[in-house]
Image 1: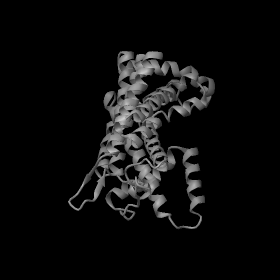
Image 2 (image 1 turned 90 degrees about the horizontal axis):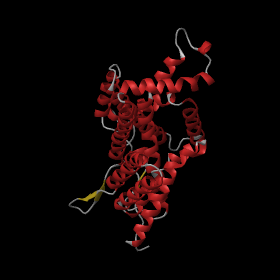
Image 3 (image 1 turned 90 degrees about the vertical axis):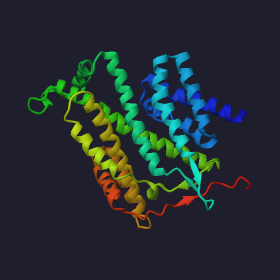
Image 4 (image 1 turned 180 degrees about the vertical axis):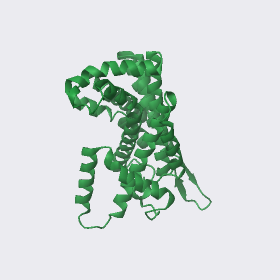
Length: 321
């Protein structure tokens, strides 16, 4: 118990530090903040979801005491809550009449990541809207602040037709929920996978390790939700915010499934490493357009499986070993 408490305290302080590092303004600091939930997930997967809960509380309290209470609420909802919920779900299991243990499916964890990304984005947008007075006021104020920055790097003469710098700035602000939600799916998924690997190497992972290329999938229902969200983009105001956040989260999740399909289908191929490396380089350089192809694979897989559904698992270590 004492060991778990010490781990939770350390994880909470580490997560809080990673979360506030961007205040330094450096590029490396901005990258590090995306790993803020990693210490919490390591604690949760290795020592139980209660450890994540305690670590999240410690992190939020430390930020509130030494920095800003409002900033601590942002940490609680965008970092601590998703980490706790995913670790709690990841620890769920049931035993059937034959004694076989069924763990919470990885595919359902991906669905939870979608919901958490949407919720986190909506909470952030709600706070920004309340501080500005209304959504339109937030868009107008943010656009006005962004225009000078754009003008320093983008000449007005380079704008196509009658398109102005103000139009570009407004477009960027309107796309904020879409970018935020999609990026949250990536960061939550990456941190959960990385935490699982670290805990597995440490032989503390309680559940079997599932190979993601075979395990990742999404229900066909998500395609219908994405279609309705696309239609919702035509409506101004809160509906557009909800629709853009939902559409981005689902599309990125489908892209992750599609990347898993590519990994699975290329197993055993000569030159596989070179092919996958080239694919990831293209994705990183041309983001987000190259994700359209794997996202399409993910959608097709929802209706017609492109892989064998047999999931490769690596059993947890034997405590007696």
